[in-house]
Image (cartoon, rainbow, N blue to C red):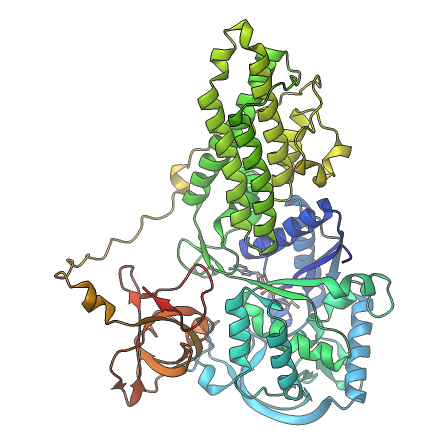
Length: 635
Ligand code: ME8
């Protein structure tokens, strides 16, 4: 297979400045691009800004400038941020670019000529924040569930894309390509959307209401709906239709997004491509949200985390490391400055930083700063080498599954093994005995090789640190590119002079004023109930359930009606609507008591019960940290 890799980030809206969420997606894309480049892939990495639509027009109006002036300013902030975070995108696209606009128009014309765009009328609730119409039942207390604002009621004549026509094709495509949308929970979520009839998509806005957009090629009284314009960036950014990069990179396209924009990417975009006669992308990789100190980041809460501030305070590589190490790709994660500082001190200052400084300092002290020769290898040396080789394999395998935290855990296993090897082999004692000089040299040789391996493995995540360690090992720029050399042991020539450098990660003190607010008081823990027989416990049939549909039970402020799959489909009613929005639950895998006698709650029959804890402030349902099959037993 050709070694081709193409990764994209969402193009970010230019109505607000970049925050940690944007930085996360873009740094993940960068880590993937760097990893593939090092492994010899021809790589293209695209990011950019999404500049049309109501949202931007409104922000510009409030700021008293034209939409273009407004977009130029914030797009400029994104563009300037990426090099500061060592992001190596190959291109930065703006939806106001001439060639993008031209291609959007030509695709619209093609799809129109083919008969997949028609003129019709629509009325409904429209959320400007989301740039889309909502069905009444999707609203929570009459408000948009994402923005908590009341949508406007709009009635308009508009152009529609026959998205519904492609529903069956898309279901089949997702079923036939199990890794099209991943991780699996988001594939399930997309399939859950597709269980409902897929409505046609309104793809225009009348100019009487909005002029900030791409004029429809077949009706100059309308501009294009911002999503129909924005998604196309993924192909205009690599030169579609005529550019030479398009046929090379498109078949390998991987999109990275957070779960907020699963629907446009998992449903609208593949059907748009199908209608335009273009093959679907290869993978849609969906991650969770960064929350801050347990709550959602928002301007009004004043808890927006700014990437540059963290980088300036603690250093770029510590920031990149924390983001990739602390989030399990696909699940939500919570940012707090306290956990950031703890992780940096433990993993970077202690484990990695100490290993590097001890090994280099001992080589300077005992061998005049020159790489010693390795002589006879003992079993403990072989164990270190075997660990290194296994870690290289495991780190790569985890990377392919987007389990970046596991890649880093594997690398840190090697760092831990090397630190233990030093403690056990006590090189300082060997140094006192001139007869053991050869043994001392062998020991340090293996440690220096470990540093070289670690440096190469961490380079996609922490490019600056990887380069600094290699620099201390006297390795020139040219060797650094060659990822393949790490598989072999013995890459460092004996006699090479090291170039000791300053401490990589000084310990950081968490300053008083940066301390996170104290955690809320703990709820009272109820006493443990009287003991039961194992046979009694065995009567409870617990199962893995996938939530397929979720909706509020009318007139209840606590209950949600859930359609679940536990190998068979059934309905259960759960009192969790204060803790979860319906759409947050779709695709989640939870634990259900499957053999509870059915009961009726507010008129709805419930066949089973979902397990949850109230040990936090709020209810938290039990989920899994892997992806078990629906219907599987839980014991
Ligand atoms: O949706 N945690 O742009 P956007 C993790 N223009 N990632 C987050 C995040 C958080 N709390 N907040 C934002 C748009 N993100 C459209 C996209 S693409 C054709 C058009 C990241 O500025 C994450 O990648 O609202 C999310 O999907 C994206 O920013 C949304 O960026």
